[in-house]
Image (cartoon, rainbow, N blue to C red):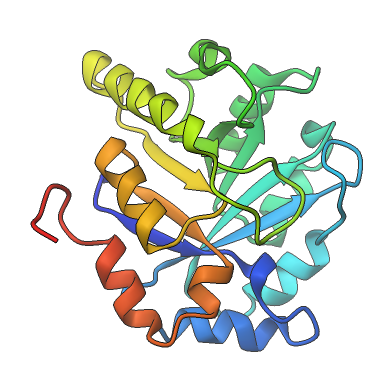
Length: 224
């Protein structure tokens, strides 16, 4: 994975009665190559979203990279199902008690890339045992469960710290942010070191989605 900035529209913010149309809107937007799919179990987070069948139905015919985020108490029980359904990257959380290192190996063994994620209130050091085993580090910038929440400013220093670790140790993983990402907060995350931006409400409601993507995917450090 390169570090070229990527916007990954979150299908959670799409029209749930017409998810295929929302996926098409993302796919038809210049500059969009990824789509982010949140999977919630009603236990680890207080909401329910999609199952493997929904992912499989969306996968049919789509050429987007499926970035699947498992917000589950026991994600290791569902890896096979979601990769079979079409997940190409699977991100799991560091907080629940389950065999995380083995789960990351399981994802890789099935040909997908893997990521590790923490919530805003989780110490960033909880990521350290997994940094040599992942392709992506996801920092939630809201408490997960529902879309449309406000961005958490206190995550910015965590992005900077993770970016420092990446540079210090020569890691090649991407740094993804998810939650309250709009043009203003996304650019701040980019300046802090993030290169992958999950945008839901801000993307789907923007009057010019291509311009939204172009702005966030511009070269880091450029004059704005």
